[in-house]
Image (cartoon, rainbow, N blue to C red; front, side, top):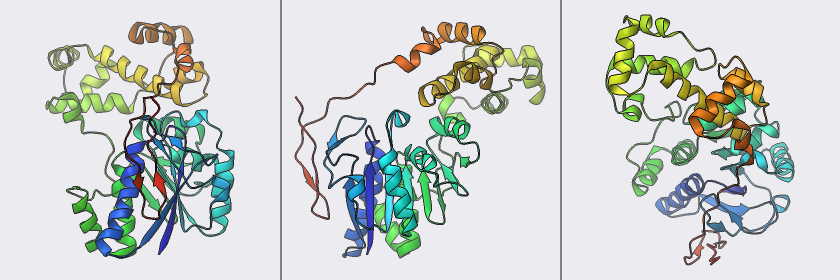
Amino acid sequence: MTTVGFMLVEQFSMIAFSSAIEALRLANRAAQRDLYRYSLWSENGKSCQASNGVEVQVGGTFGETETLDMLIVCGGVDIQRYDHRSLQTTLRRSCTRGSAIGAVCTGTYVLAKAGLLDGYRATIHWENVASLSSEYDQLEVGSDLFEIDRNRFTCAGGTAAADMMLSLITRDHGTDLAAAVAEQLIHHRIRESGEGQRMDLRMRLGIAHPKLLHVVDLMEKTFAEPLASQDLAEAVHLSKRQLERLFLKYLGRSPARHYLCIRLEHARHLIRQTAMPLLTIAIECGFASASHFSKAYVDHFGHPPSSERKQPKCEGKPHSVRPMAAKTGRTLELADRR
């Protein structure tokens, strides 16, 4: 039997956590025996609040974890705002004992900070790829759905956590069991690790014009060093005027404006998720000066970039429901805070 500990960080992603733990529960159910025994832990041993406001009761503190075969860090929003030193200590100690170490959603950030991803492939939610890569430029961070590299495993979060766990179940207990779990999850297909995280551009933008899609893809890949409109047009064998007409017809704005929006959205992710200086972020997003960046930011978002880091955290109101018993007898308590 494999013992698994879920390390809950404040504001963790409920969907990533539940996707991962439910895959293990259903594996036990499908096998009609306990293949996995799981437990929940937090920094102070008290209930931990997810980003949707739901509070989950745990069995103890990070420092009190017993010897576990596998530890999974469950991250979520504002991961950089919290002190993870006690969790990092627990992860390092468990690693020296031979435990497998994993993460869902932004939990990858904690593993990186603990130095446990050096020499390993890793991934994280697409919004955080750039910020993690900027802060830990020695890491091999990709944008795949999930990564399983020896005894390290990370995923993008959301339902990708289910795919990652299904892949681990396949490795440990075979394809038949994994397929049975996927069926119970109403998961029509177990996705491969190398599949992309983001929705296909065609569906995301609601357009099918191949040349327009190619140009937008180029924009998203070159936001740090923006290409001239003429170069973009030549890449798809169009004139500059033809390209402008395509953008206006299908996206309702000029190529330059769409390019600018892509760069500003990326800048906002970096501001919210890193402590990088604003000037550094401006340069990384293709702006020549801090003043140009600030003006463009205000025009687009309605407030200066400096105010992004002062925004109060949005916490949802927890729902009141009956507690659910976990397989181990521990309780997931959903608190009524009305």
